[in-house]
Length: 133
Image (cartoon, rainbow, N blue to C red; front, side, top):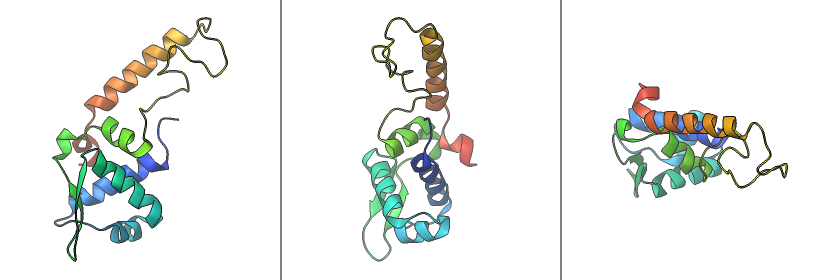
């Protein structure tokens, strides 16, 4: 599946963080967006590990964008949130594997690969600035 709740929550969180004048903590974001705190904390940590967010500790701490919205691709956000490259179909990113055991004999494999390539290009070109403003 291309997007799960993790991707949705990551995008919603980044929207709130991008509008804020100061770092936002996990608890505040969780409350604002009605997202379970523990799940959101994991997502925000993954976004920070991928260089999308930075965090500051302390009384006025929280998360803030590590770079401008136009430098963050939607693909980067999905990868950080999901922990894997987004794919439309189970086999579309892996030419040498097939969940149905039909490696080399799948007649729609070229279509799936082409479709996935177009989605990949689109997600790499689409930035947070494109979708959040």
